[in-house]
Image 1: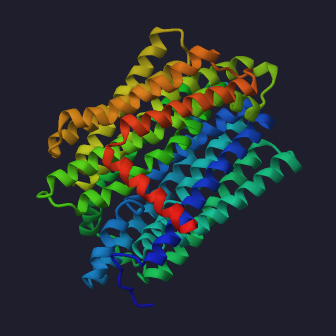
Image 2 (image 1 turned 135 degrees about the vertical axis):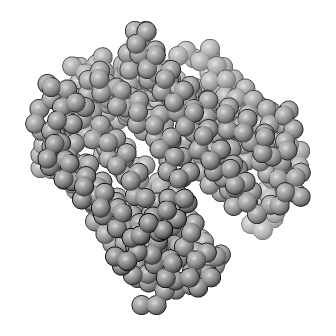
Image 3 (image 1 turned 30 degrees about the horizontal axis):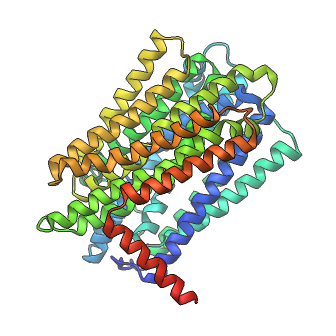
Length: 518
């Protein structure tokens, strides 16, 4: 098959298909994660689930070793194919695949020769052999998937996100069905649960790789692995890898620290963290949308660029408010119903609920920080964005570890550290943004402080009126708190966050829609 030329801009129809499949996959993944975690925690308990969560944490770090197959190829290949440099593109794809395969092989040899010692170091001497097997299953699956990540790079190059997310969506549904059978119907052990949890994603990676090769038509050759191709690939991926590692360091590093307190503490920390990060990912996605807009605006259009930046930060922060309000008030009751743990795990559940409250407040800063990061990437400040992520992650993790050693907060100290890291990420990134783009300090500050004030009012007023939310709060009380908080947010956003011009645009859009319907 001859290499296809890459279309720089997909058609409107293809763009719609990409968006539909992307968001459909996102919604299905969130629902699947909630269902799988909930039923597994009910059946196996927080202690066993802590081992599984720790295993997936280790697998997440292993997934970084793809040598840019997922992060760099979609940025490099379209330019090479458009210029007709097919042999160079083939060398880079081959290089990414062969490096991933080499790391996969070495990693598996290490696991089979000395993996038990590493597992004992991580889990402690008291862990059972079954716990080692769970760790091995997750890490081996992640290693096997490293070379297959080239499939994403190829499909993204061809602008076929619909294929990638469509296949992944089928894998999510298949995985959910298998887990339901294993846990609810067959009632098998957690090792079988781990196997069926990692197999569908691995199968989807194989299919995505096959379809990616068919779409782009770049063959994998052993001649692609050379010093020059490795250097070129790493020169494009250095900042992206550091950015991804830094983003993971705060959350996954804290999860590893929680393991020292026991597997139940891992669940008490990681489950609310998963719930919070999945919820705020919807407001954080604005950062990815603003990157190409900023990149397309010239330096000469300073005022237009400044308006886009301030609007993106303000909008992302405002979108985060109702999400945090819902998490803060309804989250404890939902988690208590969702996990349904027994009396023997009451202390772990109480710790989990406190962690949810701490993380919910800090999660507000994820949205605007993602918007600032998107602006920095669009402005060409990849290393600056990576620095802000790394420094804030180190700071947040350091605060969590310091509180863990000096206070009696227990695993909640790590939750506080993560929230502090989220705040530091926004502060550091915003300071770098001010140096790169000419912005009014007042406008930049107000884009963050106005939604922050709304958040405090949206949480504070219902708490004063109805009391502090808890797992045993009455349903009508929780609904009243969410409604009051949401109403405060809606009114405050309309009058204090949106500018008069933005309000006029929305009013005109509503009028046009109403007139068409009538």
